[in-house]
Image 1 (cartoon, one colour):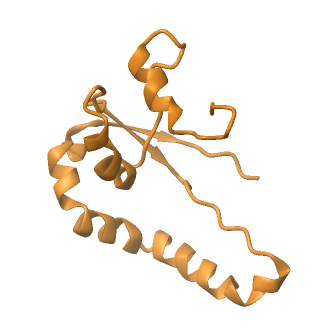
Image 2: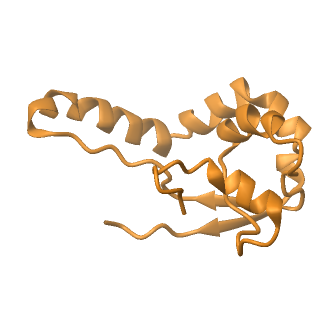
Image 3: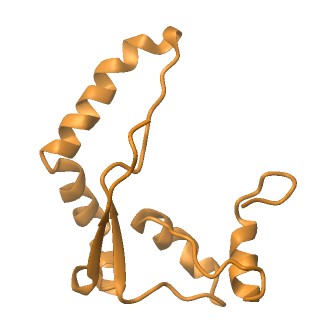
Length: 113
């Protein structure tokens, strides 16, 4: 859902209005840390945390094929838990503030393209 100019940030206004058929939209921990303070009219859901098995996809053009090892390194970092450890380290304040460890965790499967 975007406005005619493709600005996804209109979702904040639609959720705040409460009469647009939009009651919720998901944000990642990293996004919440920076965006939530800008929207005091809304509140971050306090009971649930949605876990996506893959939230980011990198597409490389043939001209960028040399970057393929980088995507492999990111996959390895995910599979070994490095990414989660880094997120918990650098966003520990958000985990505490939003009590992410105390929430009901719902793991969602993301379809493979």
